[in-house]
Length: 74
Image 1 (cartoon, helix red, strand yellow):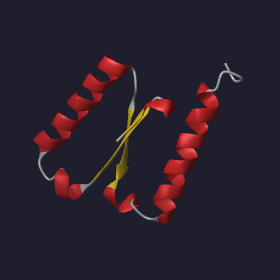
Image 2 (image 1 turned 90 degrees about the vertical axis):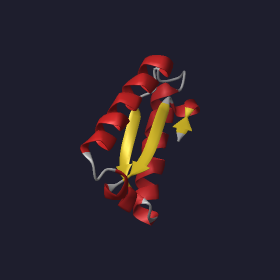
Image 3 (image 1 turned 180 degrees about the horizontal axis):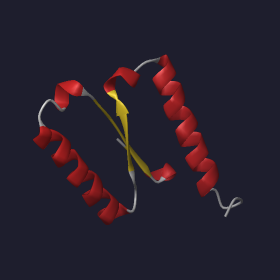
Image 4 (image 1 turned 60 degrees about the vertical axis):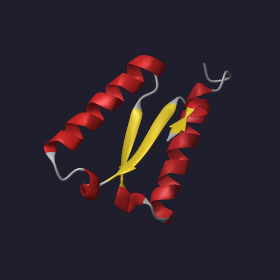
């Protein structure tokens, strides 16, 4: 899930999608491709974080990124 205004890609995933080594390797390669193409890093959150607490953590991360990227901070 890209958040271009925050210069960040967030992906929720977990054991169900990464039972095999190749799935993990494929994701890490895609992360690098995204970084090389867009300059945006990928943050991976566990599928278990799709909860109120996990969404609050994501909101805090996006807020911190927005502050870091705002022209007043630069």
